[in-house]
Image 1: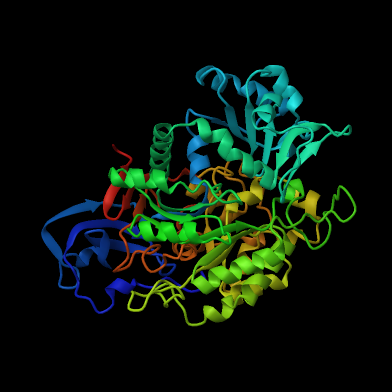
Image 2: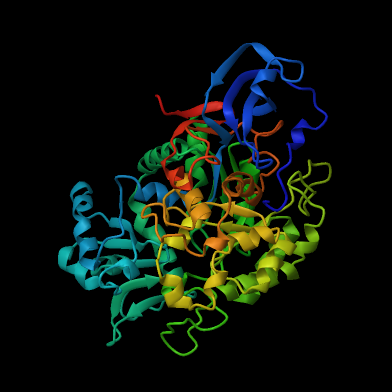
Length: 582
């Protein structure tokens, strides 16, 4: 089970059944309300589901159809709710997929430098060269790069290569100069500048220091260029069956979160937005940004649903916060560290909870997870959620007489490495586990190398989380992993990488999910994490009519065939936004 199952939609309770103006049918339907796959008809009136039933029932008293209704019969295909990416970074994903920048892992430091040549040729002279994706631990040899290789190729042009985990920048000398970073510069709190044995800058900038620089690096791109990138990226998502996303803050300071509500608003105003977007700006002491977004954005497509904040970094760079030192410690007491002081984070969480706002905390290491749960518990999260549902309880900030606002949702993001008792505690507190399945295959052998065999059984423990009653929400952390939801479902079901199909038998296969469980995590679970579980994530009366049609029944095929499934059509609010035959 997925913790608490989605409801049939608050809007349908006690309401007369509307006649459908669009009927979508298929011989294999998955509603996300249970594990069953059955012949399914979905009647849509306006942008919501009016009724569901067996195709043979279409047109009877319980399943009325308007005289001029359109029919879309997909025959032997598989009909299910649209995929909902619970955690991605839209700005960076769109940017690196566009002609404005590039994206590659590279085989070595020099290979990455060489791969910049096409970008340098198409971008204006003197402009930034920006790319993302390098991971030094996947190179041969696995060594951290330096500015020297970039300086040799581009001595007069600023270059910024963002790491694959989006926590580290690799800069050349001209970039450091343009950004005003000198040998005397000190990194901001929560970040660092790497230096060599002689104390000189290497060009590697980590965590908060990297995040602080990114807005200045991408500042040269125009709004029109970025809108083109957003259009292309949402088209890619629709073609992959994605109907909704959570756009998560990627930065830690004011004005640095890259949650670009202005670009989404421009697309929506032009009638070009074909996704539902939940915005999660940075959690700060000043909550005016979220309040302003919620005041302006109250339509069905774009909403601001809560806050996001970072509590630690990533395991591969030893910046994830652990209780015990890394197995391959680089110095005594090498446990990583929090990126925000725990007392400060506690005050921020308390303030958000008092305002009736949800919070989503990046917590990868076991100590970050443990302390974040402590902070949630101290803020009364488990108590405040008792009896609450996504249909809503009035929040503290609701005005007298206003419609109840949905209960705030609290999540932890990424959750790679647990202290064992915290698995059940997370479920008991009602904290959603927002997980990106493909993270587990990014660094083969990395968990054993960095954390050691004793901690490995508690890494990405998806089966343990579900069995404890936790709500799982799936996403990709794009651009950290690709946005294809079928690849992520495959990894959750097989514990193998969707590209290499390794390791044989799966990594920690006892933690694998069933296909229905994985699909529910990617639909109903993600909607819950976004605070939109009353409207999204299931095919049921009253829900928004977001659905996808695939060419095969994912629950019936061999798991190795899951990544090969093809999206035939994607609907958002009853509007077909993608069709494979067009």
